[in-house]
Length: 283
Ligand SMILES: NC(=O)c1ccc[n+]([C@@H]2O[C@H](COP(=O)([O-])OP(=O)(O)OC[C@H]3O[C@@H](n4cnc5c(N)ncnc54)[C@H](OP(=O)(O)O)[C@@H]3O)[C@@H](O)[C@H]2O)c1
Image (cartoon, rainbow, N blue to C red):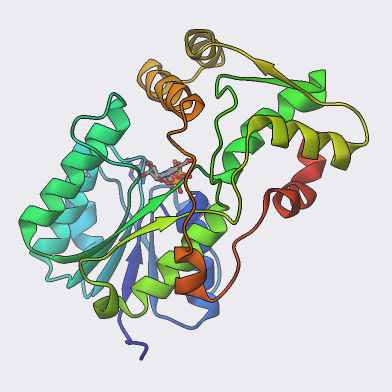
């Protein structure tokens, strides 16, 4: 049974948050979107709270009368912990957290950070649900300008397979949970697309969709890190990304689950469909 509650979505201008807000509003659930830039606030039947993870007073204002929080952010521990603490102060009853393959002893700093956030959430005693999506198909869009310019893309994932998922499917799974949270208390869902994909597959699908060859140029994680920094990615993010791609090459992302279908009733988006929808960006 669906519960009528006010749902706060953080990261509401991001890949998952924006789509979750859109889906919740389309399903006529009361939803409040936390955004830091009013000019980027979602339109339509959505309440907007202007706030910043670094300013707890704005989080307090955003939490008023909220029952359930969909917590999405760049996963900086102090910021997410501030959101969790504000939720506790305001009597929020359930948090659905978008996490990743979190682990306290992961070589990837971002995953250790996620583990710290999860431990903090657990320690509050608040009812919660964790989502562990595989890598987002939307990450491929970062390759689009390079593919468009050079008909090739560099990547340090070797032949590693990835159960890539469309962020819109992550949002759909999150929407199913935040609208009936008590059914999902204490659960962890592993969210993936329908297939295991290598970057060779990406090059093949782009080749077919664009009608000209697209080459996957294999580089090392160290080369990848340097390229990301050269492109303006902050060093800590480049470090975690390069480490994550190195792990992908070793099979770390070669996992699939049926959780999206179980939660939403829909088969998640495939690589081919995703690229067909976004092909203009690559051409
Ligand atoms: N990318 C992947 O492949 C992948 C895979 C598995 C898990 N994840 C997890 O997914 C989460 C990221 O989700 P996403 O990709 O949907 O995020 P995203 O697209 O990067 O969006 C981040 C959101 O956070 C907002 N934000 C950033 N700093 C803020 C601040 N100080 N105050 C308020 N809002 C702030 C951004 O607002 P602005 O628009 O104003 O910047 C934006 O709405 C992370 O936990 C990550 O570990 C990602």
